[in-house]
Image (cartoon, rainbow, N blue to C red; front, side, top):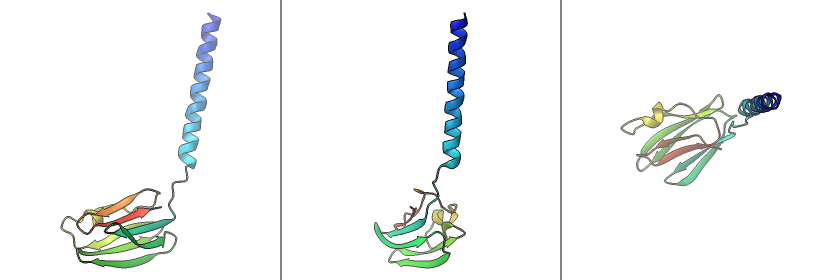
Length: 111
């Protein structure tokens, strides 16, 4: 009986250690991006550091978007696309996050 209880105790301690390690990794994960990369028709047209605010109009044959970096996050302030999904998207600031305007073939990616 003692052997079984020892294994249960070892299993419980191991589970607690693994759970604590996962929590530490989640809390201290560095996923904050440093720059926004803008692409139009698949080609990079502009890069902006997230630590510097800016507002930039992007004009193409398909329409316009107004790209903004403010307070460490990037977003689309205005666009003339029909559904406004890019404008209604939350600001992005973490590595790998994107905002896409399909009608204009415009993409913001955080790196």
